Image (tube, rainbow, N blue to C red; front, top):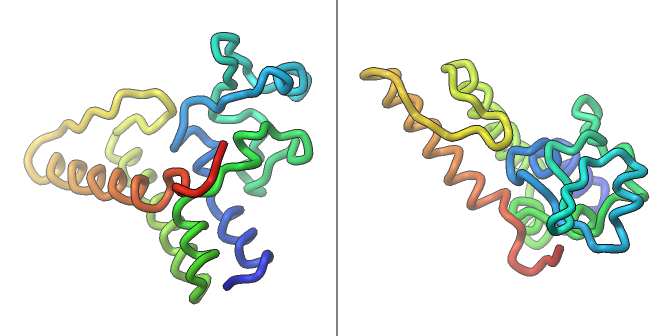
Length: 157
């Protein structure tokens, strides 16, 4: 089983749960709404929810700038990749490579003109080999997001 430092390193190499790649919004408990507003999260009252990407996520340092006051849904989130690494251990390079590959695919799709911003429609277009490459990359991305970055089945949030 990996130590806390290895688990933290894997988690902080990512940020997909904060930057809008995985989710468009996070759920707030009623008692968290005022703290979320104080921390400048964009609160959506019909839920209540907060919009993602989170404005308090520091992408450069891969960290939450309101970590001690982050919502319960953030506190309780654990992706399948991290849960698997915690359970099975092994070399840290494997989960780090999974994170790196997903970020690479997103960058490649953006370079090919696909809008990967949160909430954008995922439309695969192009001609011939270019369309095939985009479709192949997009398929790999969806498979990896489902396999590795969805909420681990045994976590709450």
